[in-house]
Image (cartoon, rainbow, N blue to C red):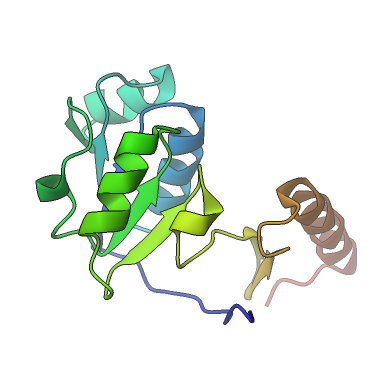
Length: 153
């Protein structure tokens, strides 16, 4: 299957992140950079997520995943590793919601590519989930190349 490359304006869009660990933290940081309004659904939070919560950068629902928490989200991120949460997301998400399966790529309909911004360029690299480490490596090489070429604007 061909994945359609697309950049989305996330400013003010609602994002539900299911999970409170390191993977969830990485996704939250990317969403915060994009200006999304984030709700994290998890019984506990990674220290970095707790800092975001205490600074009021994110909203926290201190609970397990429930369908009601997902209904108004523009994008849902599954990052808990919990099969029950994944089943709830699978059964309750609308065909019109974006779903990222950070903990199970078969669950999602969108992916977060390895990306960076350099001047007017926003570059994204994806391996369709087959090798995120390789995508990250290629991203780093491209980032270095852009800096050497001094592409700014």
